[in-house]
Image 1 (cartoon, rainbow, N blue to C red):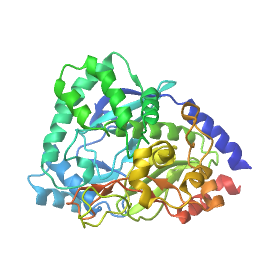
Image 2: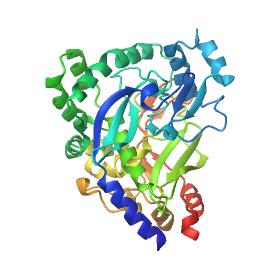
Image 3: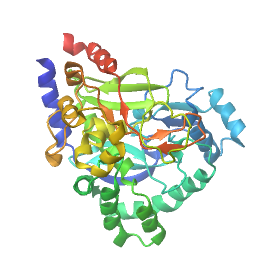
Image 4: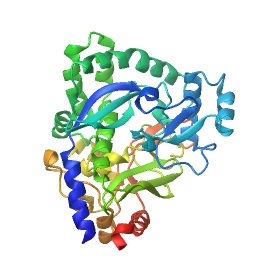
Length: 396
């Protein structure tokens, strides 16, 4: 079959990528992001002047951070009138977590392919524990975290990376071996990164931040997975491999390697999972974030067999038979991660009738509550069927 041959070639390109963390760069310089433009996760909004509430809250904070708005009401008007534009991050080669919005000053991690240094992907540089832009709230303490990220953390990390890029595979492998799934849990990978950075950074506050932020490795791995999967779509030859699984708080979207520029979307449901506060009754937002790229690459919810802490936390929310079923909709394993499934394949999803899982956190739908807890998301089967029917090479 055409798709089998195309998938074999696409998978070979994925396996050839060696992701290295090369730099930290402001979005203005990394991707040429102009003033009064911000990037959001997931497919484009139907109306970017009226984004989902968590994304709107993050955008308001970024307007204040950039100095474009005098107060929240002013920022809301700029967005509603289209004077501040919200665009799809993945159109710029950027993946951003949850409701995090990227503005020109935002410092991004730059991940490149050691075998093809011209190939790049970017994601948000973490800002440490506590309030974060990705949680989609109006918490003003986020502004202080962003300032520290961009003015203290980024320069220190940039100095380290001047002496050479960091290979992300050994860090990810260390995480898997210690029980990470590399999405809901990245404790081991972050600890390995901290051990690598500690002798090279004088600021003890940065080491303390890494010790207190077990998910710091997450956005690095998001960029690495995006970089690997982007290689699958290099020749648009009818491959049915999934290169993006993301939500904007309203719609969930996927992109296939055979048509990597084309989003196929559906109305998004909300992730479900254990809450930080079991008494918290806030409604969870529909799927928000680009981090499903991790699960599409074979990690996250696909690694739960080897991540007992995450699996236990999700136990009440996992579908019957998940241990044997999820691997059936993925390709063969990546050579560097032989125990795990490989890349999500839309053709297998449809053929097997198995919906894929993604480990994506829950945030408040009101744009105020912020982080609610860990979450599991199941993408609708019809999304993958429509994506296949939209691949011209498959029906040529």
